[in-house]
Length: 381
Image 1 (cartoon, rainbow, N blue to C red):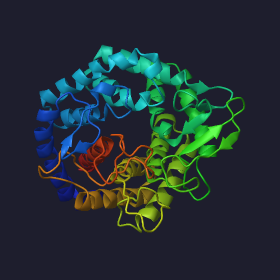
Image 2 (image 1 turned 180 degrees about the vertical axis):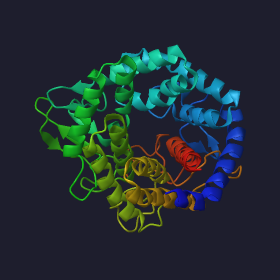
Image 3 (image 1 turned 120 degrees about the vertical axis):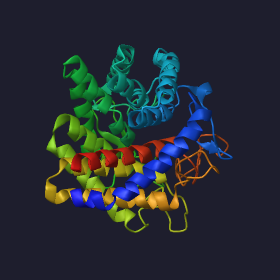
């Protein structure tokens, strides 16, 4: 693996230089906003809908930048957004399964980088909220609010790390057990034999039996929404990291092998759905960036003989995204284009509907992947 990293050192350094240069420009305009996508090349702001699930991905980006550069303004903007999110944290009806995303990328990163005790308290409260969504009879963390009592989604594998973190913080495994029970249920009922995954599974809330498998954000039920695949790769890799349960690593590898096979057919830039019709031009660069992060984590966990398989996969994705999706000039504030929020438009006029455009979480995971590669280079030096 060391030789592979060193062969790509100039590429990794070059991409980071581009990120650092562009970030300084856009951060001075966005500051402590809550962007989601770009409109006419300018990132929008969702502060009027503070409970939207993506509203701390820019915060996470700022923390990555602060960690790498030490630039104080990045920390100040990130902490300002985190404080604004207090209004959501204390509004129970606005909270949902994505509290993991929202406070892992804000309060947890803040606490880990600065030791801010208020940030730790926020994250612990968010973990308590997430744990309260666990259906004990069904064995899963429910997804949305409203009439979705039995609904669970693959995305939630990226939220359960908040529970693992909380167990370490309070030296009490009760949070971890909830995360593991949800991961076990997901492993059993979401991952198919070929390594593809369901986006949504509807369970009987009284016994956990499967009632329905809706299409979700993919092309159809039984298809293969690429971002769902990426949540599974990275989510199960993280569950293995926190718990050491080898079945989670095996699950991450199985989904990763399926995704890499699909990606090899499209030049390593993901389709929105790996099984979408041949005449569809929808891509999702965010799925590629997330998958790359997961592959790097798998590479760190497997024996030496296996490491290069997963690391090469991650590098192939990142190089493809850089070549065909990255925007390094001032024509657009996004780092990546060619991101798609869902295959089908549920409301074409709604501002959350993005097709082959910018997605703030695609930017975040692209930058996170480069940061992971930089860290591996340091360790291999």
